[in-house]
Length: 178
Image (cartoon, rainbow, N blue to C red; front, side, top):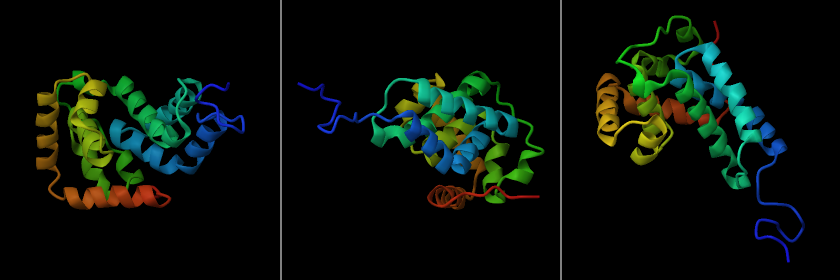
């Protein structure tokens, strides 16, 4: 008798290395954008991408249909490890050169302090629940709710920002060039 995770044709229902390489290749721009919005740093965004590939390929088995969301989660986890936003003291990251690389309507996100930025991207743009966000970020739900409220206050055109982000996910997102 075959294990439950092996189909009758002998293949598993789990994502393979090739599946993750394909996802990171197809979604390169949107995964990089996710890292860029979280870290507000082009080099750190690249590092998140590279580490995300490695962690997805070498990590625990993931069902094939969850592989794309797992890839996005790996970028988020890498960014959290790098920036440690819940431990930051309400400081805004220097966003000088990044502004040239990002779609102007999304640039306002970079003006948020680290925790506000992570909470906004994770909960509003990526759709993570408050519980998932607070667990991943290592902060209380109240801290999360307060950070999101501050972020929404700063981002008066939130609907436009969310629309721009979602459009970028549905098509091949291109970062603004010089």
